[in-house]
Length: 74
Image (cartoon, rainbow, N blue to C red; front, top):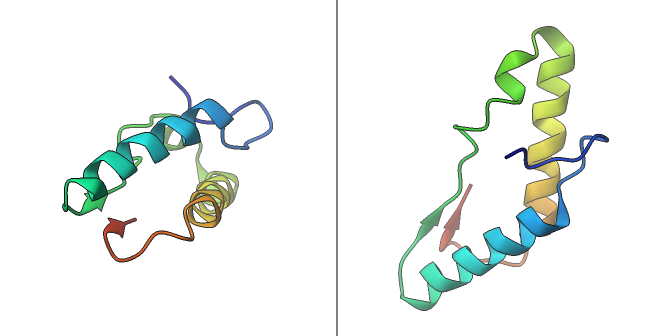
């Protein structure tokens, strides 16, 4: 499952599910580490375009999750 739509924007259903899991983890007094390591979408893109897309994705993730404290590690 891709986490982005055709415009390189995060899918709202993905970010909603991620928030749900993050909240569950933090409510259990644990730390949550978010990684997109297994998302093959960006590893198929080479060169500067791939890097730009990767940076864009992490900027969106960080902005969506900006209100979490140190219990969320990106």
